Amino acid sequence: MRSPLAIAACCAAIALAGCSNLPKAQDYSTSLGESQSQLQQDPNWSAGRIWVKPGPPVGSLYEKKIILEPMQYIAGDRPDELDMKGDTALRDRALAYMNEALRREFSQAGYQLLTKPAPRSLRVRAAITGTFKNDRDPRVMEYVPIGYVIGQTANAAGYRDLSARLLIEASVRDANTNELLIASLGTVTGSNLPQGQKPTADDVRSAIDDWARQVRQQFDRIWSNAAAKPG
Image 1 (cartoon, rainbow, N blue to C red):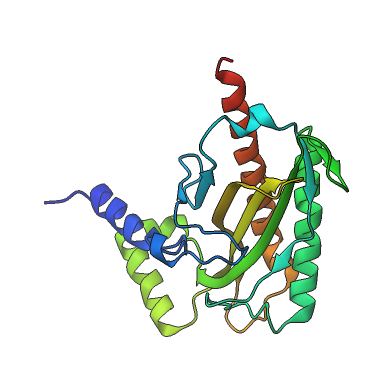
Image 2 (cartoon, helix red, strand yellow):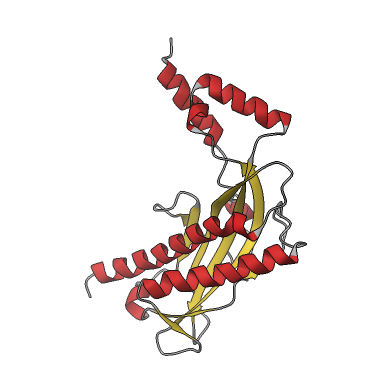
């Protein structure tokens, strides 16, 4: 007979399964113009994938000088459950905050932000390419069996809160040659959305903050790995 703790753990795993919204490898789009078929799971970001150009470490060839292009929303064949394509106010405010968050993350971490190419500099592009309304993260009480059943009943009845979620792609290129060096894709979760409430930019601010931090940390690890390798 299974213990209540084991049953609770099983229920929690079921409740959290499938919440990343990361497309399967064969379904990766080329929204930013690059093939993403070689993206691999980021071991430091469960909802992220990354590809780094093989060869000498990027961090050994380039300085921490970057041009941040204006963030974009690219409508494609992925879901747009927050209606970012049709809601101009939501889209414009979200992208403006995305620009702000990324600049803040990189400047505070010691990266030099440029407005034009320089030797050994990089160009960063990023875009929101999918939006979702996921079941919000279960409350602690829903990890126990009876709570899980109640939570699933509420979900089926259509009155359980949802969470705003974004799928964001990014690419890093040589600022002078435009050669692709890094490709990144990940999903991030924002605020809860009560049923019937129209999403606003405030609902995705925490998701954007999380994404900007994750991408900056990806950069940090790439430079750290280069410094750790001799020669």
